[in-house]
Length: 303
Image (cartoon, rainbow, N blue to C red; front, side, top):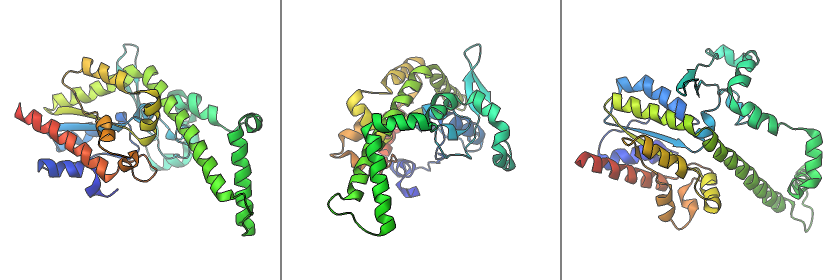
């Protein structure tokens, strides 16, 4: 995605003002708030927009993202918890220097204590060969995957196509089905996190609202929906509606720009909203997001 294809760029054109983009890939709501507190003093604005994806509910529970996003090994971060008074408390990361990233083993006790996903996602998805062998025959999709993977590798190694069965096509079909199952499991896990950690999420939004108001900025919350969440909600209903309603009740000064339904209703095919098969919004979707934000801001300026 090029800079001139982001919703921030389109918003600057709509309003004819400079719109600073402090978004960071893979950041969660908590990291966004911390960065805002560091940078806002030197770059104040009349409006502050906090844009996060639904995956943020998982990111706010991480201190080492590898436990939830396997392979994201250098992503270590602080996190907030609720203290005995039900107030948010910052837990700083002990990983402070670049050299520390080469010795993460030294911090495993901290990671295990404060990363929710260690026990609830990571350990449950470690390969257990006994369980894997059992699932291999219990779940046909896994057995089919193994068969087509082996046949596909054999074809590549021998540089020869096995007649009739079309290994590559069947390999891709099974892979697509497995990804759908995996994404559904992930989304349902995140849905459970919204319920279990609803209070923490709401209080973090409250911290964003409080900081914005203390700095004379209007807080605008922009929840963004990756493709997997949109497809899940088609069949299972809204993930965010409950928490969205609670945010409206608790923080009347917060403007919520929930554009997901509007985006879907404005296109014939959901593929128009995303780049390729990924979860990132397309330039067309970003233009529509900017239009919604622009209308909100123009209305507020007229009040």
